[in-house]
Image (tube, rainbow, N blue to C red):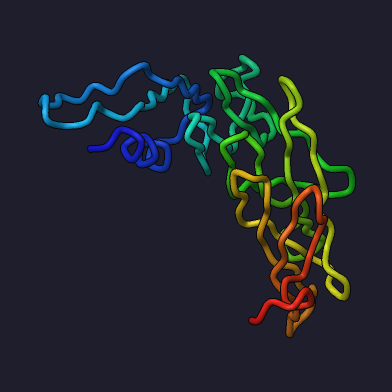
Length: 195
């Protein structure tokens, strides 16, 4: 089984508290001389019991959630943190003032993370977390005009985010969006793209 697929399966099936992703120097696959060399693989090190990996890029960075280990065992449960495991380090993503809760949806090759912050369907805003050295900067993408809620669902390797923005109440109305640092939040329909 392809190592990357196996790791994804393990990450979704086995809860872990702290996952360190280490890029392995070579995959442990027996190949014949006629086959291409094995692809670079990943190894997950499971060291505890309460974490969830959501997205992984080709560098082996994993975005997800985990509980920190304060050393008090089963007698306490610290708050759930949204994190990225990068080069063996567990980095907590910064919270967003006024928006409780963080959900990550994707991570690109440069380690940029897309997702949203806030209470689901109440005050949710699409977000991007941009790496800045050994930490991350939170960027609130806002909402499209006439809407109150937004969600980022994907980010490509050029830093372009796609998602949707909608109204809070029934029946919801809204539109998809594209975002980049250069353009900001753009409604593709208003920009002339057909639905």
